[in-house]
Length: 274
Image (cartoon, rainbow, N blue to C red; front, side, top):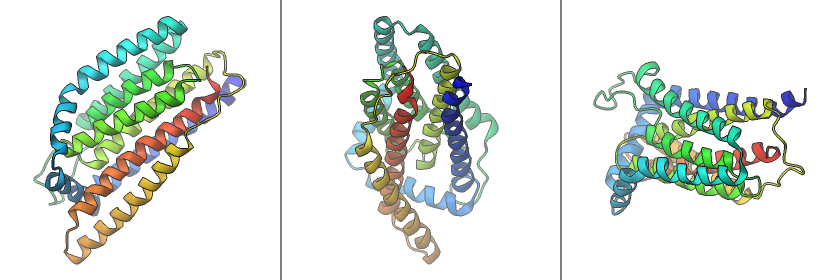
């Protein structure tokens, strides 16, 4: 019974993550106006990328190696110190699940209907590079002790946000692709929480108090900014005008908001698990 109660918040987290993923897909991939808004942000990134393109190019080239090698080294060091091999197995399983499901969703299950918005590009949601970065951060977060999980959440979210934003700047993905990639990893992070709760591992007593309220406030501010930008972009499409910079800034704000809010909420969900 106690295991069920411990697993319940993670179950809700998984359901909400899945629902938000479906909503992002239906709005920004299946609808005409959603495709237009996403495409405006995509075009804005091309126009306003400036000197950021050099960082994005370098970062994305190093991302696969950095995620796997650095993530593996940090994970192994933590495991050797904490001797939490069972958590390591669950964390790696969640990361593999996140990356495999990302590719299956993108190339097998989901499709992008032709709405006359782009040049008939194939579906690109969710972002694989974002999933790689976020899942590497998830592994380190799960393995870290409760005392250091807030730090792992902050660093991991910044890493995932940088990866996602770089794919937008590099013109590899639209904002919705990046947000969806983060939600896939969040879903698997909750699945890992369910498994760990049912394994009846020792809990963190007393529960570690969350110290990430500043992260939530930054995320909320970015979320409000992204909603305002979305509305401006929406009404500009109705009047036949373009606000590419606003659309681009709104897309980046949505990526930042998603990364920070998920990190803060994930840290709170795991506050009782050691």
